[in-house]
Length: 426
Image (tube, rainbow, N blue to C red):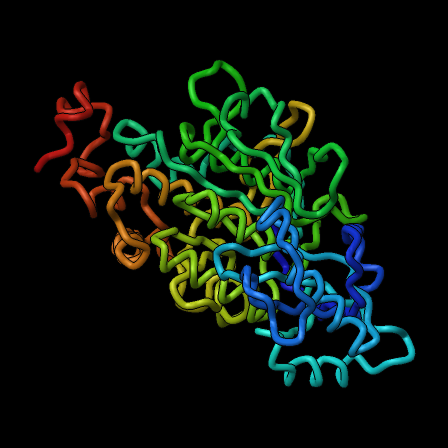
């Protein structure tokens, strides 16, 4: 899927936070130009000047505790704004609130004032991130050539991702698809509450590239067909059938959840502007040993989010050469579509998912690998393909952590592969 970066700046929502539960922001960014994200420390201690309250629920359901709720209410009243949503980010020890600035006030002025408030840990614009995919003209294009190009056939005889937990932060995934049955262990919606999670095209396609079941007699094979998937909906499908948007707030909630659940890999098949809160969460994930794989924005550099965050494995499709990043096939990739359908899609999103699959194979083979070591192994497994950019070779990547026989001759003819464990030489 083609990931196009949007520089849309999500807006400040300055809000007077009442003690009642906060309402959810609908997916369309109808008030995006008036929204701001703030974070405040989430502790059990009363802040200066607060009335003495009995803490009843503590950290319940990711909502604010009593002290934090009163703090957000005071901030909202002080700046004449409205709190419209909020979420506890345990990984950072903060509560994140979405504030809406009234139409008669300057968003920039309010933001500057909030940034100077000592009660507030951080204040920033809400931002938007976009994915976009397109179908090729020839629906009969040879199926799954990307797996052949990247030597997945050989790699799958040695590893299939079993036991590795991959968080796919994207649009909704069709968890009932025949090629995903049993693969999705957790499904959460951070866009809307109180409704069924929709089966959307982008998330379903990415999940298919990573985790489509092997050997079930139908459909396709995923890059890591035995992984456990956490399908975290932080993006929503837009009017264009293959494009989607995400916001700073929805992505922050999903990233925080992934950190809380201790996943092994996070796939971010999306791109957008640099974002302080998302950068902080991503850095926290990497510091905890979670490998983060993200799509590179179109252009010569890998700035912005997520590719611009230090330690993120940035990926670009082979047909978009440029920058210091990994390349994987991203053109005419056969994958899943909702309602037990299949489709050919193209773009950096698909290339990113293929690299996530390689990472899962590596972590199954050697669970102690750190994110820097994974990045080093992947860079050492790039193989020239014609006159284009080098492509990531899944089998050679495994060779980087265990001595195996890979490309000297077809692995199916390798006598060691009769016993796959024997191919893992000390």
